[in-house]
Amino acid sequence: MDGVEPNHGSLGADTGALLGLLRFVSPSLPIGAYAYSRGLEYAVHSGAVHDQASAEAWIVGLAVHATARLDGPVLLRLQAAFEAQDLVGVERWNALLLASRESAELRLEDTQLGAALARLLVSQGEARAQAFVKRSDVCYASMFALAALHARMPSSMSLLGFMWAQAEGQVSAAVRLIPLGQTAGQNLLSKLSVTLPACIATASALSDHEIGAFTPGLALASALHETQYTRLFRS
Image (tube, rainbow, N blue to C red):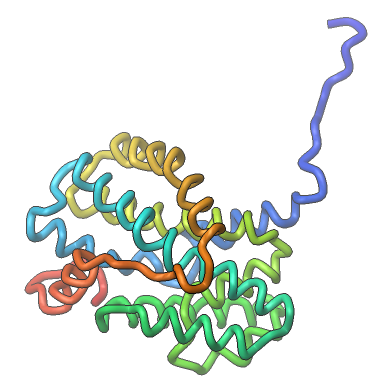
């Protein structure tokens, strides 16, 4: 209309952090996250997960009872420790996460993703990641915390991205394994969009002594997946 100037808008000062978030949670990030199902493949094999509703119960359950209560709050502490150059704190929280992995498969996934992300960060000029490249005991959350600092993400943004990446990876696995259609997958992501804010609030509010997850179904599924006869996902 005459006299109306177009409004091109502005993303503001957080544009760089937002772009960093999108990059580090992208499924195309070359760290191999697509190769793991976190026990979901066995859950499908056993029949415990067999449709959209049961997939939602599994994925939302992990977000609520595992990521929000263990990995999420530890991620916040790792990012704060890196920011304060508190390497003792980084090692402490990394060790707690590693000790919390209840199967060889879950430990392998965590350390493989951590090592791959460390290598990627080094290739992008993040000198602090160099010390972790050749280690076999570095958790994914530890390197994600460092990636967040590298991209200048505030902790609230990195926590959201971390939780979303974990949940989206599970949805992608469910779409391939059950199988679900792409529309059903999007419905699951929509449900997670409603659930994750409460998970973030939980992760942000926990005290140190409250951190910990109890997910026996995940532990059993991941352990049994290690000896499953045929597998699409890595074990």
